[in-house]
Image 1 (cartoon, rainbow, N blue to C red):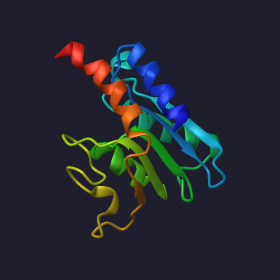
Image 2: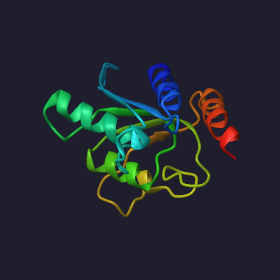
Image 3: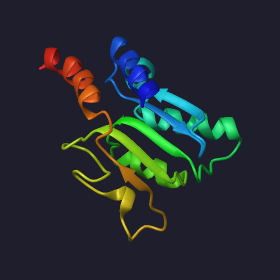
Length: 143
């Protein structure tokens, strides 16, 4: 989570919503990382999670990230929840809950939906205060 928080801060410094993500293997080695790049790239899919998943897949030469963990500073949205399931990520660890668009337990629970063919373990609220501070510092002046 330490690296994800640093990436989130970088995103905020560059005008993107401060969200950072890393994908680790079973031993905790970072395979890919990302930060929100929507504003920087104009790409609506350039969420931190998607950027990190793409980097991890490129790193191992496969889309299949079974036994990997996605660590992200904010609860994933529907798109990112779907992406991590499509990549077969085994575990999701996130910081702040997203009561407006979260898809891993707050608004929706796509990541653990028993109707889907694949589910992931979810651990939320890890270093939530630190992730929330970054988000508030970004959004408060814009409101």
